[in-house]
Image: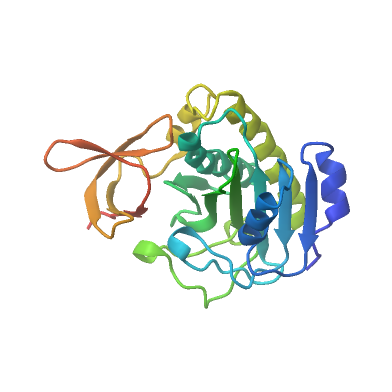
Length: 269
């Protein structure tokens, strides 16, 4: 399988990003870029790895990152003018970018709140997104994206709720050239992130909320939300607000807002 072509990526992206590097292996691209931002790395710094040995997703879960099978990338951002409270909505922006690339490649895809991209008729997990704020004098965030391009094999554990893994290749993508896919993804993300930044992180003002609602498979579903404190919220996913938060209608008639949590789609019996 061909390696990622850093020169082709830099040439294709032009001046969209301040710096782009590809490494053979690392523990976690998010961890590496977090250190780089603390040390003063420029806004819009990109790091891709052929392999991660300690890739992580939400709630410190491991993210399977076998060599050459996917895109494991992180983007360091310093979105001046965006309030800290709005940084979490970057996961929505990234999800829309991955969704657009998958559908452009002919893959049947959908979004799952807050940070997954599903694919195929069984709605298996094809990509995961992790946005992490970085402490400092100005707002900074590391946005990690793991996208399965080629099949991962049979030993990848299922996610919360038994969510199986899949890949673009397994869902009939018209291209599995990882450099081509990375170029398309970083180009689309750049376009959407600039809209988001100009709107100070407001998804409605950026014109992105309607798109997310239209493609979010979570909305209208009965869900179990595993909250950060360990408790579970059960109800029907009703809406996503301008900050990217999920609104859930619970059985007692209230509509509750969830800013963080793992969602399991409850399939009808």
